[in-house]
Length: 361
Ligand SMILES: Nc1ncnc2c1ncn2[C@@H]1O[C@H](COP(=O)(O)OP(=O)(O)OP(=O)(O)O)[C@@H](O)[C@H]1O
Image (cartoon, rainbow, N blue to C red; front, side, top):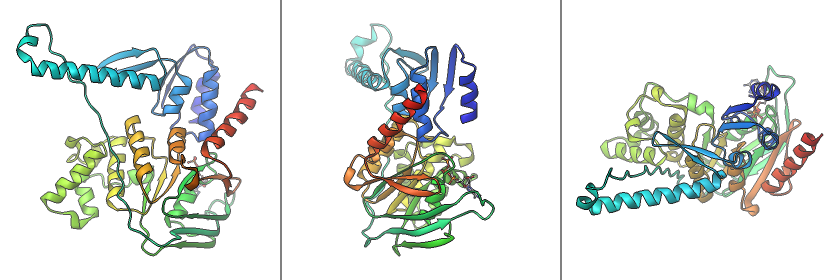
């Protein structure tokens, strides 16, 4: 991603077209790109699901709605307010038309009802466990075939209610740390302690790729929890899939035929059904649309278990860590994990200060 971005920026085009440029960048690189694009004097057209990125770099919004392009001359946050108002006005017109059908029929085309797209993620309240839920004590790790990469002296812990944002440059070991927390890698040194009945719900692109592609989402989810069989269980699974934003006609389509975002919803539904105590999420936003990212943020806010998140989406990180008391920022860099002593917003502000100095130079 960095190489193709560098190539696009290097030729100084009159028109710069960027399609989801933040997807494979780390947070620092996203903030760097924001700063660079704010200084970009020529035309930029960007497709992105990253709210803060859009709000920072764009001045106008083109919204593709009901097979038409609508131009809004405002920032994304303002666009959302105006769009919501338009939706309400259109739907009121529609409701009035339905009420007084006879009279309205004579005056031109009937009004359209605007599609109401709502997604609601939810992770059930976990059962109580005695702390500590999960501890890494003096953990060190290296891959057998990678003498150049090592994580050392990692001392971290997670309990009910803990919110952790993991940040750090690409390739420094964020995903590796998550795999250790999940218990799928054994440290070369040190100790991992986990509560006996601990259930972890883990999301990463890897899990999306591991779905059984020839099954339908309903078959797949019923197979994970055999006690969920029978017609009413199927309905319950379908209701959950629907809430996670998978349209009902996709519930019985082989997973192979689903898009990346649709598959991601199947994984989130399976995580929710497993009733985890801790959620470990590695870049969960890449395949999600904005409404679903908001739905995820809402669900994480109300979830009473622990949450560990690697993301480059600063809005999601900021929302996860808005309660200073229970939030932690772990920086994975230079072969170890260091806790940032302040809030996520302060961490971000610090990065932006550094980046501005660099770009000024
Ligand atoms: N299974 C593996 N075998 C060998 N090396 C690996 C393996 N998985 C990751 N690595 C290497 O370990 C280092 C850390 O990778 P990791 O994916 O944990 O970093 P990251 O911080 O999550 O990166 P990114 O931000 O790009 O996702 C990288 O150099 C990577 O190439």
